[in-house]
Length: 615
Image (cartoon, rainbow, N blue to C red; front, side, top):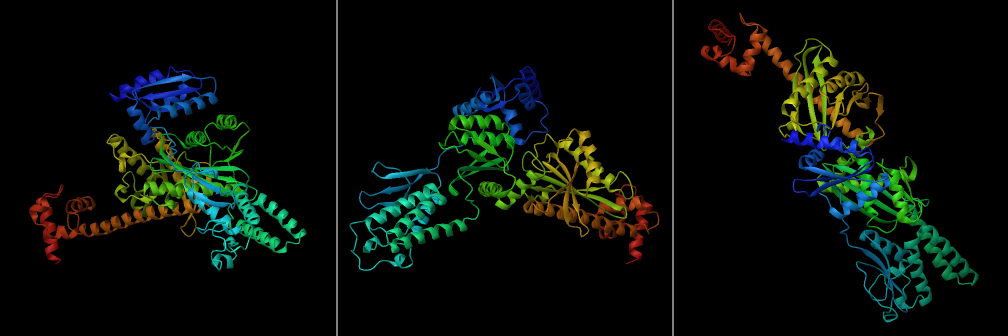
């Protein structure tokens, strides 16, 4: 029944035009479950209803629920993007990412008719105050206000001025440590206090560079007017700002107005982090978590377009952490909304690249909390996926190794890492049966052949691990030779699209690089990915060697059985398969021994008598 539906939908999809447009997937009740755009409708939509092997679990689930689809043809990819965004907002489909603006806003408030006051507040009210914002990060707002009050020596107590001036005899500790000008004791005039509040606001909203220029001008004017105490106080504020700037080493003074986006994916979830900069200062940070059936380039495009539909300010520069599916259309859309040109780019080095990495680390940490993992694990998978050029981080990794002693007791081991952690219930062992002797390439090919033979048997069982699960990535313990031996095997099954790489060791048996069809990929400078691959290589080697040693021990044990008259290697193996251990064989009576295939009553008596004589 399911195959008939796929054939019907694929037949319909193959009749679509090769023109840009939007497609709308619907379930059996006619409810919209997914909306997407396409450069060529026929090519994109028909992919959903072909072979399901290359699809993620989420895509397969959407296809299972899709009973029909509609489409709308437009004139350009730009129009397709605009229409897609509008329709997603209108219908909120189940399988589309939906950025929900459910965070409370935070403001910086300046109020006071006579003496000005500055504070961070959670909501805006009609009380005559001046509100700066909104900001979505309460932490950014609170820290900015606290930092400005410290630099410009503004009071942070609950006193009200001028009511509380000179009510207390002595100023508080903040005055003596030069973090408050003590208006409560009349140590500063109203004019100078209000100027300090104005400077604090300029510092928060304009950034370090602009306020330092303003303060230097004020300091020079004070010095010319022989107000040396005032000039010294302004000088202290300038030094405090410069000291603060040095502490914020991740933020460059060359960063003007810019938003920095990064997307991280794990366990069928995705997180987008955005850092917002103005005049060299991080003024806001946000993150959004959702589920998606799209690949990362499409995810970035949709999430960024969606983000600016719920935010007013669009900067000229937008830095992103990777490819965008249709960067030209997204640039055109944002430039139109802004009313000026917008530049979207991927920084490759320097301080902007460091900011992208900071945004990605934030996304990884938030996503890790959501899926119950560590930020380090999520970041490692994200880095590995990026390093290998994968469409998404590899959630389910299989790794293989061969172990033998000069070609004897030849075995293979398969281990699984899910979510960056060993999944020992999915480990599998293989005894090489196709040939005798030493040939690691042939052994690896045999192991992968048998593994995918098992997949063909179990692929419809709905298993989430083991032979019935398709891996996102295969890592072989070895170099390009192992990769070349296994690649034809995957292609023969029709799974040549599975990412396949080797793990190359140095002379000290440590991970050195990753082997790919086009050569080696250096991994030492990607510390998170390097650690993960090293752990995988060490674990698969341990597992396969452990199995080899057990098999070798059984072989040595079996050799003692061949000392019995009439018992050769095959009958010895049959006895061990049946009884598991030599100790069990020793305890067996003649009747029990006869139950083993190939063991006659005469041979059973020989075995029974052999162990009785040698007790």
